[in-house]
Structure formats: C-alpha cells, structure tokens
Image (cartoon, rainbow, N blue to C red; front, side, top):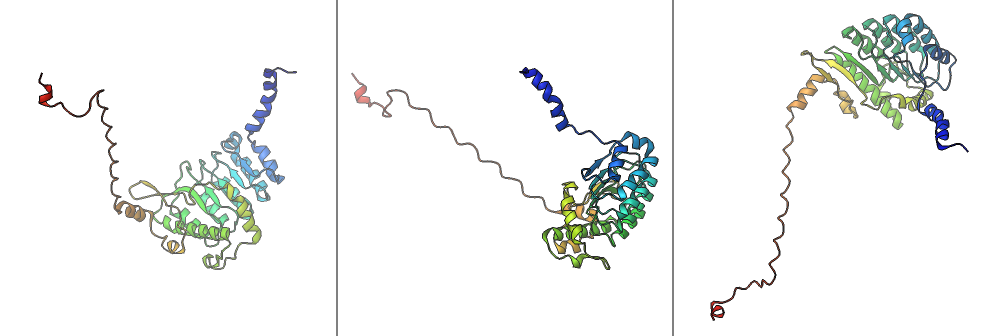
Length: 303
C-alpha cells in the first residue's frame, strides 16, 4: 500500500484542480461564446494581455460571438484597453442580447462617445441589470453622457445599477429613473402590478424575461442598488444613497445628492450615552479570631 506521503502527492493535483480555476484565453472565450456553450455562464477576461495588445482586432470578434449567445450572464472586460470604437462594437451586440445581466468595463479608455453608444443600445436591451464604467483613463462623463442615458430610460425598464463617476449637477435625473427601475424589479419579485411605473408606450416584460431576471440576479453585486459617484461644485465626491422602497419616496427622489447630504448634516445629533454604573464595593474583611464585638467593662479589667 502507498505511504501517507505518496497518497498526499496523489491527491494534490485533484485538490488543486478543485480549488484553482484556469482563466479563459481570449480566443477560447470567443469560441465558446460563439458556440453558445451552456456551461459558460460567467466570462472573465479581466486584465487579459491579448486583449490589451489587440483590442481593436479581438473585440469585434467577441462582440459578434456575444450577439448570438443565450447562456452567458456575466462578462468582465476590466482593464482590457478598450476604447470608444470597442465600446461601439459591444453596444451593437448588447442591443440584441437580452441574456447578459452584468457588463463590467472598468479601467478602460471609454469616453463620452463610447458611453453614448452603450446608452443607445440600452434603448432596446431588456436583459442588462448592472453596468460598470468606473475608472476610465483620461475620460470624464459629463452632461452629454447623462443626456444619452436619460434618453435610454425612456424605454429601458431593466437596468438597475450603474457604477461610474458622473460629473454633472443634473445627475439626480438619472437617479430618479434608476429608482423607478428598481421599484419595478421589486414588484416583479413580489408578483405585484407595475404598470403604473411603465414609461409611455413601453410594454410589460414577457414572462420569459421575468423568469430569466430572477435567475440572473445572482450575478449582480450584493451592494446597494445604486452606486453612482457624482462630483459637486467643490470637487468632493459624494455617493448617492440607495433608492427608496416606497412610492411616495420615488416621487421625491428628484432632490439632489448635495441637498440630501446637507439635510443629514443639519439633523440633530443623538444625545451622548450615559456612563456605566460603578462596580459594587467589595465586602468587608472577616473579623479576627476570638473577636465577639463587645469591649470588656472597666470593672472587670481591675485586679
């Protein structure tokens, strides 16, 4: 029989295979996306060296494969050196792909032009729930990008979260629309009617799309529904609060982030906590041996 050391050596490759997942190459990912591999539910190509060097050649192929895919729910292209032209190709695939739930484009070179292409795709997309455009090198999203995304929400009722830094004092307009979509999502999850929240001319989601969203929700980050960075006039970044859950709160969601922060700062601080009670005094020491507690009288003390 093998020694304990030999048995451990035999089990080591199996344990490593169970705990270590080999990352996809760009070529393998494109082939599996194009073949609509049902096991490729999450495609992680973050920091891919081939995409960083050949993004202009590889992204069009990846976008073509993604356009016809019905199983991939999450695509991570963090730090892949994608520019506006690459975003345009991905947007063309996103316009007709209603299966992808999460798209991460963090740490690339997407500017206002590329973000506008993605916003245009969201007008017809009914699958994407989370979009990450944070930390774009050399780019700042401003009012033009805000206008493009605000227009997309005239027909989009499925996007729940945008992770980015938007430098615009009108960002509360987009916050309000994201709050609306999150309320629609909550009503869908509880089986309640949401027709009163639909934009004019937009039809409710088909039952197949509702079922697909419930299964794809696990690919959305468990953080707050809305994580949107805004820049105030003094240059300080502030995070928008999570969306309210009641209909009355939705109607008042147009209040700016700066006003909400000021309101919290003006709120009275809670009273200080009372100090804890002192510890009980220790018990007195026991009397000495033979002590009766009665002093002898003066007459008994005389000889």
